[in-house]
Length: 265
Image (cartoon, rainbow, N blue to C red; front, side):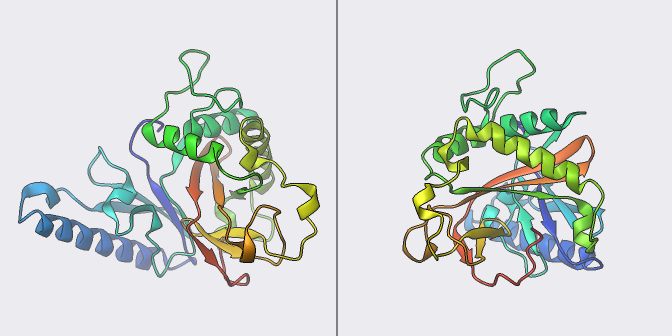
């Protein structure tokens, strides 16, 4: 929930859920041991580690065993942790609920960026606006400075992880993602279309694989610098049920060059 510890989600090929959970839990245990050793055997690492569950086929949810921390705080490289058996990562996700499409979009934008009514400003009390956390404030500040056209929004549903051609809730997820885009465009140039003069340049457009890795599909966004190395962000929305969604906002750190590789998007 906004202001509280954030879970992370990892997608994988169906039937590999247990393998992925074992891999993540081992990595977290090693990280906890290393943290404990670096503090000369102090008690800091005793409560470390993560707890993994698989709420849907092809999906793993990771939470910290310590109620006060995000799941990624227990993993090597934090939100950049990239397990071998994971196809895609939604790091530091927020969980939002609403009965309507617009409500889900509004709550996701507020939880991730602390924005009110899409104006990009801080959340305020009253009117159903939720309190923001430090991560939301930091991301809002950074995204506001991001180049125009640098934000991509991806919609996912559990059925996509099983290869279903027309998965349940996909249309609803797409509509929620469209609403989020409309909200964020009001306050952030990063969510707006890049300058038209650059849209036909034969360069590269970034999409996203796991935890901020971007892949290219031979299309320029109008925002990237030479060789498509410009700043990129991805907002991922995973619709868990018609009224519940997980949303994650990540700044991309490196390219994912193989456009044919499974990325879940």
